Image (cartoon, rainbow, N blue to C red; front, side, top):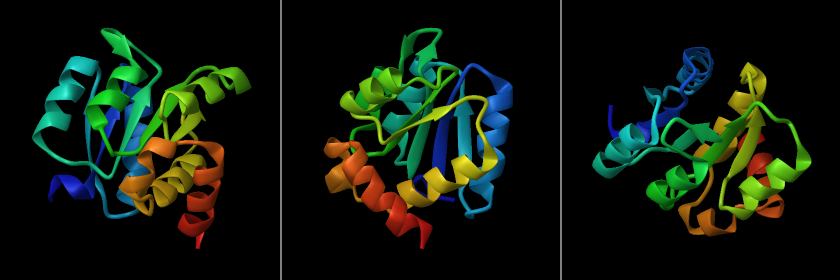
Length: 140
């Protein structure tokens, strides 16, 4: 399986990694999981991914480091906080989407559908308007 057929899950929480991994398998995608930004940077430097799920706070950094390392790959920020201000801050930082934890299987699947159809040229415009467009396309 090539890197382009995988997702990267960056979370210090095993339960969250397991739930996301199970959801992406339904789309024929594999996954690689890690618990730190340093490990994620190694994986991102070695191969391409379809989408990256990253916890907002990591033992050695935060989601902004993952967004920078992922370049054009959509990054979904995972957070324990389902707050509008945090959602907007993540989008302003370049995140593709924001998801409250623990990850809901249906929500994870919706985001994977949207991200797989997401064009890299739009990665710098990670805002609600672009995301809404791709979510509709991905849901078809």
